[in-house]
Length: 150
Image (cartoon, one colour):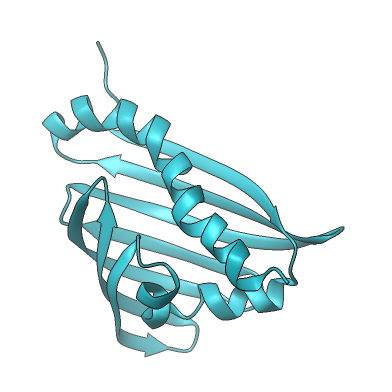
């Protein structure tokens, strides 16, 4: 049986709010633990130059807390792109992009995850493919809806 080293996740949702309102929340990384407590334990910006920032975070996933180093490019009122390296044995590239649509904003989220530890590939590949986007939608998108939809 073959287990992938790289997993591609993608989801798209419409939120009934202008992208400017959504951007205020999703670009406020240091307040992620307040907005999304089931995902982020802490986020600290360690370096910022224009729309580029480096962050150190403690994130929650699969019932564990682990460290993540992030290098993020903010795309004002569009979203962000980020390269992430975690102590969980994964790294990845994520994009959170927004576009105006009738009735609100379409969010397209893409995450390319690279699984470095072979044992994690065996356990993680099927779990990540099935569970990760479902869980992320519940913990992030659904919570974001509650914050910005009026």
